Image (cartoon, rainbow, N blue to C red):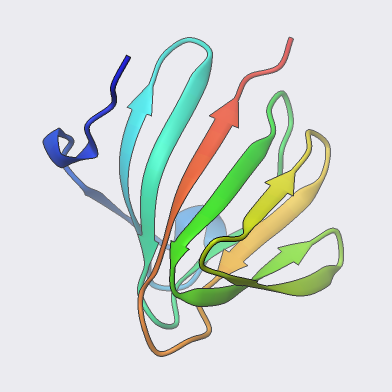
Length: 110
């Protein structure tokens, strides 16, 4: 199956999960997975949240930012992947001067 994000309308999610500014995303979802192409503009963030019943993998396409993960911060750059297992908390923050773009995959767990 091919997911063509060019054919999916972008949605702007203001203050997503308590974050700053807005999270722009194009999303595909079925009963097992949610797959997103996301963008955070400079100063935007996804708020801190815990994954219950799922996990999340974020692959950075372009830009730089930081991830809050279980009490600490880590820098992320293009080409890197951040993984948040079920039961853990995280946030994604664009603290740079350019857009942060990424793919995110959220599979449901039994």
